[in-house]
Image (cartoon, rainbow over all chains, first blue to last red; front, side, top):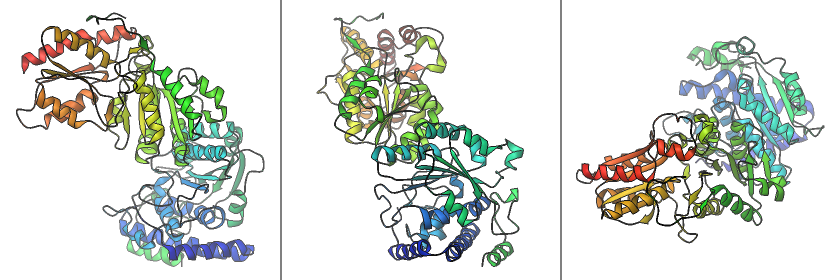
Length: 292
Length: 323
C-alpha cells in the first residue's frame, strides 16, 4: 500500500484554495496548467510502460482535474475520512489518468508513477483500492462502477452525512446492461447526491460508438430513466463546474461530458486506433511540445 | 421424504431461512450498520419481517442482480454491513463477475446470501438450481464460503458476519434439514466440525448432506465400523488440517455435496489428499452432480444423484474395499 505524500498534499491544498478564490480567468488558467501536467505525465507513463489506454486517459483528464481540484470534499491526507465525497473511475482502463490525479493530490508520492505496470508495482493497469489510497473500489471490467456508486450514495443517504458520489463511465461502457440497472435504482431511490458522468468521446476500442451499438439519443434515454440531465463540453472548466453542481431537482444527475478522445495531442485526437496504441519516441516528443 | 437408511428417531426438520431471518432482525435492532439488499426477493429471501421493522434499511433493487451486488459493495465501502440476498443461482451466476471484482477482489465486506441453494427448487429445473456456486466461488481468493448444516449454524453464520464482517458467501438452505449441532457447538471459521469421531472411514457432508452422512454412519456402525463424520461448514478457508487428519487416521474418505462435483467439496478434499505423502492417500469417493438435473422434487433428485444416506454408506463400503 502506498502512503500519503504530505508535502504534495500541502501543494494540493494551496492549489484548491487558489482555485476556489480565483475569478473565472485565473481559475481556468490554474486548472489548465494542472491538466496539461497530468497529460504530460500520462504520456510519460505509457511511454515507459509500453502500454496503456492513452485515448481515454486524455479524454477524461479535464473531468478529473475539475473534480479533484474544485469539487470533491476529500482530504488526501486522510483517504478514509468518514463522510467524504466519493469518486469512482468505472472506466478503469484509464487508470493512468486517475493515478496522476491522485498523486498530484498527494494520496501517494509522484515517484511511484514511473512504476506504472511494472512487475509488482502498486499501479496495476486497472485501479486497486487495496494498494492505492484514494481508489474507492477495484474497477476494470466495464459496467461495475455505477452500481457501486449507487450503493455509496444510498449509504450517504442512510447516514445523512451529505456526501456526494461521482462516477465516470466511458460512453462505450454504457452498452453494459448493469449501468441501466443502476440508473433505474438511482432514480427509484431519488439519489440526488449521485452524479453519473458519461465521458462521451464517441469512440470505443474497435470503432465509433454509433457504428458499434449506437447510444444516441443518450440524452433522451438518461432523461427517460429519471435523471436530471446536463450535457456539456467535457473540456470546458466553467461548464464542467456547472455540471458538477448539486442536483436542483431532487433527482440524480447525469452529465454527458462531450469530449475528444486523445484530447490535447493533435495526432491522437478522435482516432480509433489510439484506444491503446503506444506512441513512438518521436511522437512522444511531439506530444510533449503540444502539451508544453 | 423417504430415507433408505432410517434414523432411529423421528427428528424435526427446519427451513434454515427462518433462522436466518430471525437472527438478522434481532441483530439489526441493535446494529444500525446492518442493511439488507435484495432482488425482488423479499418473500423468498424471508425479509418480510426485516422490511416491516426497518423499511429504510431494506433496499430492493428489483430484478437486477449485477447491480444488486455492486450496490452491496458500495454500502459496504461506506461502513454498512449489507446482507445481499437472492436465490443462489442468480446471485452467484448472474453476478459472478461482480462477486469477483466488487466483493472478493475489492475486499468490500459484503455478506452474500445465496438463498434456496442446491436443488431446493427441484422441479423448477437446472436454471434455478444453485449447484455450481461452490465451484465458482471457491475459485475466488478472499471470499469466505459458509454452508450452514442446520438452523443453529445458520444463526451463528449471520452473527459472525456481523461481529467480524468480511467478504462472505452464506448458503442459506430452504430444503428442510434436521439439527446436526446445537446452538452451543459453535461455528469456527475455516474448520470442518467433527460431528462424530471414528477411525475406519471419514464421511464429509456439507449443508443438506451432513444429516445424511450421519445416517450413513449409523448404518455403517451397525456393521461394526468406526465412522468419522465431518461437517464442512466452511469451504473457504478450507480446513486442510481436518482433511489431512482424516487421510492419515482413517482408511477411506467419502464426500457428499448437493452441488456439481467439478470444483466443489469433493474436489477440494481430493486436491488436499493428492498432495499428501504416499501411504497417507486413502481412496476418496466423491458424491454429487455431474450433469443437469432431470425433472423431480428435491428429495427425488437427491436420490437420483446418489446423495442419500444409503448411497453414502455404499460409497464408504466400496472405498474401504478398495483401500
